[in-house]
Length: 74
Image 1 (cartoon, rainbow, N blue to C red):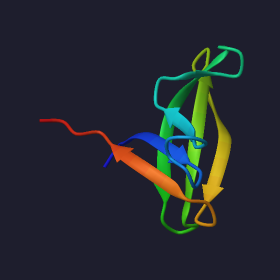
Image 2 (cartoon, rainbow, N blue to C red; image 1 turned 60 degrees about the horizontal axis):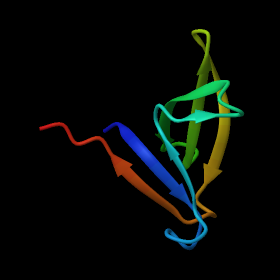
Image 3 (cartoon, one colour; image 1 turned 30 degrees about the vertical axis):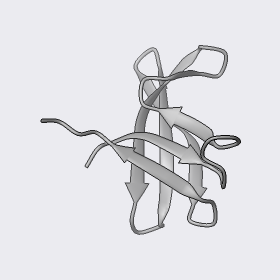
């Protein structure tokens, strides 16, 4: 399933960092291209894009509380 959004941190409403596919980051110079869960390393990686170049930006492991929202296509 495609991940649409992740929230990282113990308090979802008052302190978590939220990352959404399509969100502009790094002074609006990059866009979040993909958020993917990697089972083998039990981590979530965020890939960003600029001028058709996609690079790994962040990786989170299971040591941090993570809330995941998936794309729901009806």
